[in-house]
Image 1 (cartoon, rainbow, N blue to C red):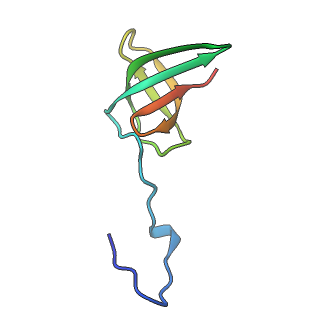
Image 2 (image 1 turned 135 degrees about the horizontal axis):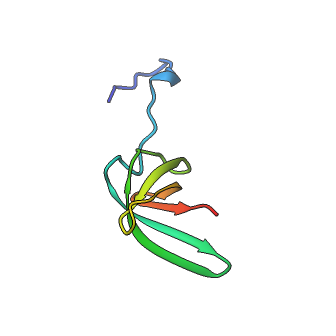
Length: 79
């Protein structure tokens, strides 16, 4: 963290995006298609901010999928 001072510039390269999912975290994985919604748990293999794609390992079959972070602790598989 840093103190913001009046009339001082913020250097954008020093800003960091907050991760909604952290590597190693157990996340809720959602898949939606044509009115069908399936939810399961998975493990994040990467950290990511909302809207970014990360790799997630399924807890059921150990396959690795690409999913988009939608909220803290939540990702959605894209079809």
